[in-house]
Amino acid sequence: MAEKNLDFDAVIDRRNTNCLKYDFAEKRGMPGDLLPLWVADMDFPTSSYIQEALTKQTEHGIFGYSEVQEEYFDVLRGWMKRHHDWEVSPRWLVKTPGVVYALAMAVKSFTNEGDSVLIQLPVYYPFREVIEDNGRKVVSNTLTLGGDGKYHMDFADFENKIVSENIKLFFLCNPHNPVGRVWTEETLLTIGEICHRNHVIVVSDEIHADFVFQGKHHVFAGMNKKHEEITITCTAPSKTFNIAGLQISNIFIADPELRRAFRRQMDASGYSQLNVMGLVACQAAYRDGEEWYQAMLSYVRSNIEYCRTFFAERIPEVTMLEPEGTYLVWLDFRGMKLSDAELEHLIVREAKLWLDSGRIFGDSGRGFQRINVACPRSVLEEALQRLEKAVHGR
Image 1 (tube, rainbow, N blue to C red):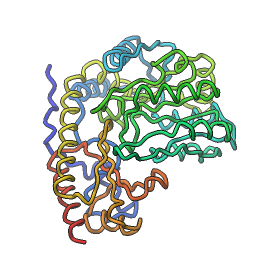
Image 2: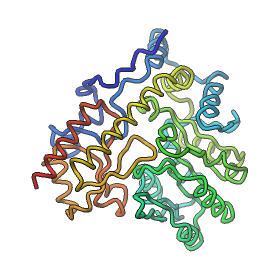
Image 3: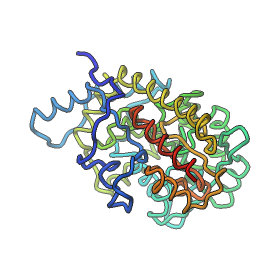
Image 4: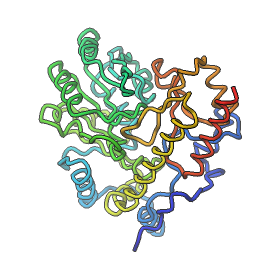
C-alpha cells in the first residue's frame, strides 16, 4: 500500500460540506463571496492511510464505547522520540477531545474563581476566552516586536506580573500562534526558571510543534526535570494531519499530583471515552503518516517562500513577519496607517478575503492580519493577487 494523497496542488471543493471555513460566512456576518484563509485547518486531504483506517472502522459498523490498546501509545511515543527527541511515559498520558478543552480543564484544576492567569498577547484567542469564561482574570506579559522583525519576551515584566498578580498558571504557546515564533532554548530555560522558583504551573500548547521551518522545537517539559514537574504539555495530530474535526488530543502530565487534579476536573466535566474515529485516526497518523507529513511540510514551506517573495516584490506596503513555525503567516499592515475599520474594509470588501483580524488576538494585534497558507498554490496566488489589487487600488 502506498500513500495516495500527495497532490497538494489539487483544489478540493469544500463548499456544501458543513465546512466552517467555507460554508458559514454569512452566518458569521460576512459576505458570501469571500475567499477564506482564516480558520487553522488545511485544504489538503489527509493521509490515505488515515482514510483507509477510518474506512475499515466504518465497515465494522459498530461504534460503541472504545479505548486504545498498547499500540496507540507505542506509535505516539515513537513519533515524539523521532521528531522531538522526547521520551514520554504511558503514565503521563491523558487523552482529551481537544487542546482548548485541556486549557479549560487546567484553568479549573489549578486556579480558583477570581485568580489571574498569565498569557502572552497577541496570542490564540481561546487562551483568553477559557480564562474569562471560567471567571478568572487575564494578565498579559505582552510580546514585543523587535527591530529584527521577531517578537520577544520581556523577562523582567514576566516575573513582575507573576509576583504582583499572584500568578499560579501560565499558558505558553510554542510554536507561537499567531506570530510564528519557535522559542529558543535560552528563552524557554529562562521562563522555566522563573516559573519554577515562583511555583507557577505551565500549560504548554505545542499543537504546532510539527511545523518548524527555522530553528528547533524544544518540548518545554523535556528540557529538564524542573520543567517536567510543573508542566502540562498539550499535543495533537489535528494540525499536523488535518483531522481537527475528529477531536483527539494527547496531553502529557508527568507530575502525579498535577495529573490527578487534571483528571478529577475531567471527571467532573462528565467526559470519559473519546470518539473512536479520533483514536483510530491518531494511531494511523503517527504509525503510517510520515510520507504524507514530509510532503505536506515541504509544500507549506514552498507556500511560505512564495508569500515572502510576493510581498517583498509586489506588496511592499505590507510586511510579512517570517514564520519560524506554524502554517499561519502574520502580516503587518500598520505602515498603511489605516484604522481598524478601514483595514477590515480593505480585506473584506475590497480584496474579498476572509482572514483573521489581528485584533482578535489582543490589542497588540491591531494593524495585523493572520493568513493561513496551508492551501493549494493556486488558491494562495488568487488570494495574494486580490490583496495586491486592493492595496494598490487605494
